[in-house]
Image 1 (tube, protein in one colour):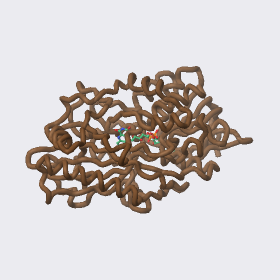
Image 2 (spheres, rainbow, N blue to C red):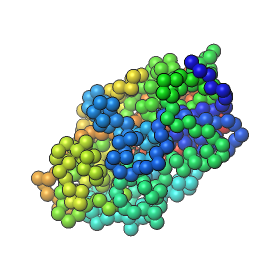
Image 3 (cartoon, rainbow, N blue to C red):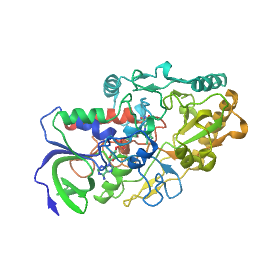
Length: 430
Ligand SMILES: Cc1cc2nc3c(=O)[nH]c(=O)nc-3n(C[C@H](O)[C@H](O)[C@H](O)COP(=O)(O)OP(=O)(O)OC[C@H]3O[C@@H](n4cnc5c(N)ncnc54)[C@H](O)[C@@H]3O)c2cc1C
């Protein structure tokens, strides 16, 4: 094993939503900071073919990874993490739950909303298909509101492919914070995977990295794991924190798609509207959404998805607060099922979605449902279980700051809360 020649004050593992924010916040001081990122800093993105490089794919099938029970999970391995391919939805979530744990994040939420310029989506970006869904939904008592976004309308070209990576820079991504951190002297090591944390006398000594065949120890005073809801528990377990990896949630979602002769969602940012009326009472939200590239619709729904014409497809996503009963194992395999309770929530949402789509004029016989999927993995190093209220693990000076620390599933976009948590942690340890 080699030993890296420099010791850092902080090592941050992962450059996604949590890691990039932390790097930027901590970089205001004079300390030496290193961010270690498994993925590449992608120069080309935005197409389905590009996305195959950075979405986490199964090594043999080359399809997005699945749990043992067949539930698909989207995440990326790249600079900016999954935040780079977000739909640009930015809402507060888990505010009450974190308050109950003693973390009032009001100040950090306000700061985040100001810095990212979060605001209801500019109405001019919504297409006729979106408005038709809103009208039908409102008539059925599902009030669709404008989704809070961090999308600059002047730069948005309405390509409808936010989740493949925004090619015009209209959408805020963690790379904005990462760039600021780098300009203030933070070092970033790409293409480098952290295997485990090395401990000495109950406290952090450094991290063991993999680069090609080489293993190197990099020493640090403090280590913060921000490798995401799947990456972080793998590292924790390999570092001796065996009970990490439990309580996985993914905010499971299912889309209902149908053919409309005149309308589509092809020319608007994904998830531009949202109905949150049933979030508290029934544990789901609805949002107009279609994944356009046909191969993606194939992944979601097989041949019947592939056959759907983008320019004639309307769709609504049901996203639920799923039960946090999944597990991430040290070898990266995942246990995650759709429980009976989850199924009940999905059914309520998809029945309502079907009703809304039919009201817009979608043909009944064309309606299909996609397979259950999740894109918000978290809960695997939950606060009060694996980390304390200062985000610290039982290994001294080893912290976790990403979606892993959520105590349960938000059923809402989690990025604003992850950013707020990272801002808070920076105040605690900075
Ligand atoms: C398609 C899609 C759309 C989404 N849309 C939205 C949205 O609109 N709004 C919203 O709020 N949320 C959205 N999400 C969810 C959101 O992106 C994630 O919940 C959030 O980014 C998680 O932040 P994180 O810091 O936990 O992890 P990530 O942002 O995923 O960052 C983890 C980082 O760690 C790196 N890493 C992993 N393992 C290692 C290792 N061993 N060593 C070094 N580096 C490692 C990864 O490459 C990655 O860069 C979306 C997710 C997807 C996939």
